[in-house]
Length: 264
Image (cartoon, rainbow, N blue to C red; front, side):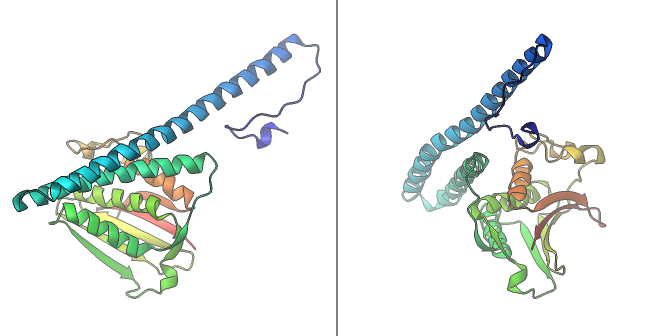
């Protein structure tokens, strides 16, 4: 009965078992030992992510502050390139904040949410991406053309959701072969809102799609593209925390298509 409701990370409440069978007693003791080791490994993982993320926040904030201070004294011809470097460091800081937030939630804290208009958060992310890649074009469309506010307002964690959207938009910049991507908000359903992020780059091979959201996986289409294979793993985890989902498919035009679905 205890095992049916047990979750790794919690203390296992067990009652002494009265038996004269030595092998059975030995098995029970070894099982308890295994559970303790699993709990210790789980606690180490949680605490390590939390500790590392927390320790990195302050030095990176100092680096950003120093870079912005130096930027004030730079020649105008250098400011644009330097601002791009500042934006990249800020992006790294955002990833660290995301890891810290996820680690807090997995340690038992409640997901802090607020009412968010999903398309407006997407537009903020597009502006951030375009500040680094001014020649990339994002085409945003809606179905229907003028959806109601109720179809686009959801309770969510803005920092975490922003990381998902930034990751998908960045992938478009890295993989699209025509320097453009389409973002389509499908608000025609009364069950959910789907967001399609589409680009015309090399598609994911069929034998690789099942591993797309796995740690450190990078497909054949990523040859020569910088990255660590963590972005989509974080995206899927964040979607699960919001009781939403994300998946990849190739659309009827043969383009890459990531689909996010938020349920009402």
